[in-house]
Image (tube, rainbow, N blue to C red; front, top):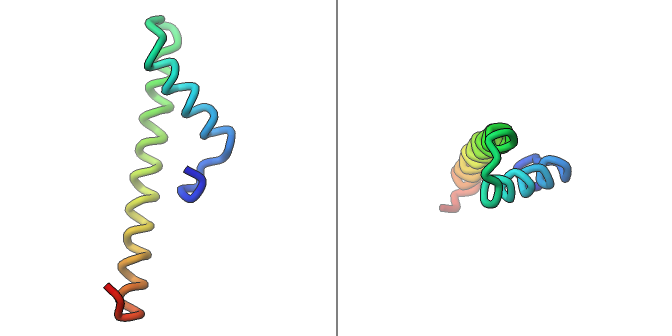
Amino acid sequence: MKPFGFTLDEMRQLVDSRDILDTTRSDEVRPAAQAFFTECHAHAEESWRKLRQQVANTEELTGYS
């Protein structure tokens, strides 16, 4: 997660959110945990898209593929 720009606090919160979603049935905390998990997923997907583009650009520049 670090290469995608997540801070240690965000990684900790992500793990906590996953634990809440896996174990907690309380309607009070699940929505916030789900929202944060969804936000992190979108952030990771965007970072992955950018990384793939950087790799493609590097392959084009160097002739590797």
